[in-house]
Length: 332
Image (cartoon, rainbow, N blue to C red; front, top):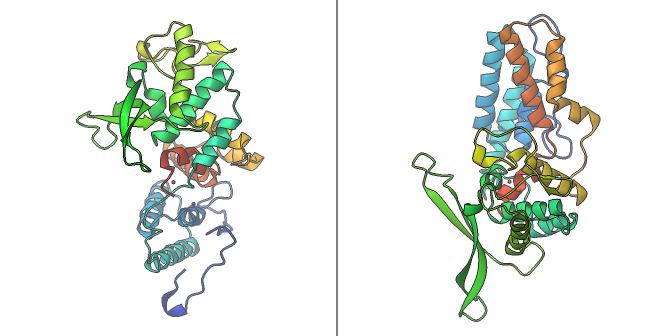
């Protein structure tokens, strides 16, 4: 994820791949510094991810105000660079006649990408059967990682549906997976959305994956509770910390889904491994160690946490694929 006015202000050099502007920071009393990252870096990362200029302005000004509240100022030279980044992004939006930059979009995870990810799984093993169902379900329902993880057995059933054959114009009966979930657009009234996913004729078919996983659950005597469950040593398991809701015992969470997607995408060659620097900046353990080594006020510790969160977001190279199943077909 430069003021072009009248062509008089120089445009910052942009390396291949986006607004990768780096700023050398002076560290002195009252000057902000966070392990080589700066507020201008964050603004450049947002611009590179095609955030609107208005959003970049709001985000950076809010962070600058919070830093000022704890006695850490943003240098005027850096403020000027941030204004230039915002101006350049606004100019790009103005020249975007087809509206391509109006909506943030992650890299599309195509049906071919999904098939490649599924091909890395051992679909004869219990864990592979579960992962295949989870990946295909998440892709076809265009869900967030938390959505398939939150489904219970009663929320996913197989039914027959009638569809018009586009070639013949006749009604044909097909097997379909019917998913019931809470509405994502009307959460206050807790209304339900019903999603019907027709059977497919390739390896990505969610109905076939559902049947295989249902057979595993039936052989283990599972008749209620979470549809996606923990697997340990090739069998279903309830090991681990008990959930707040006893009816969710044995289920997996959205973190497991995200890890599942990341592992399959990496195995399929769709992403690359994080390097040591990226792992460090995204590590909560490293953050705790950094905090323990400092003597700060509560406000100062919170400000450091905010800066590290922003750094992790900017360095999350795997985020595109993790969010792509939810945004597939949109071109996230």
